[in-house]
Image (tube, rainbow, N blue to C red; front, side, top):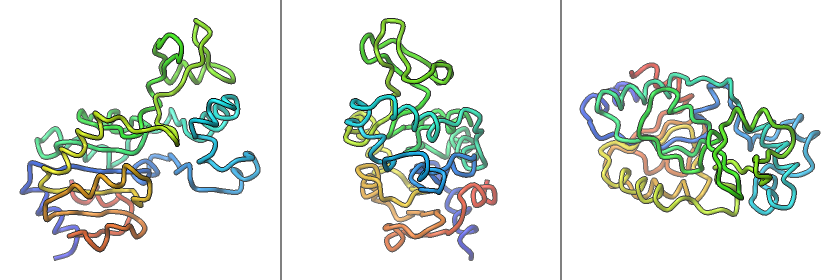
Length: 238
């Protein structure tokens, strides 16, 4: 039996699937992994991405932070791909309990997923750091330079920057879902960003599935490893 058929069998027999995903889930929707350093990026920015989207850089140089953020991390035209759609369908059919994502683009919700735990926040939520007034992504995009609230305060995206901690409530919920899952599918992530990547170690079952284009640190422990683009693979098993 090949890997796709094996995964199909497991999915058809389960009603307690948890999906843990990363940037590779969104690249098929045209959202590049911001860590991929290309020629254009090298010519445009004087700092590496990890520096620009750190908490201290945001505080010290909000103008340059927002230049990078708007240019490289906001893709309002992006649409859900097959991976997002299949996961939403599994949830609707009572098979999938939760999507745990490192992505900040909101595409899982756009596809119809309800129980989405966003480890690193969302570009669709933005708050004034002074009065806490809420602003949508469209409002942020319509503002020039550093977005400011009507009260004069700087607006910050509800995105976890480097040097910032993850939300404890979301972490605890994620651990609980993973610990009790029948099947844990890890997709589109190289599992190198911590503490998020460490969550998969809480899985206690015997159907750990890794779907990724490149090798991950969990491949040796996985019960099933499928190499490839997650959208293409999911479109074969829905």
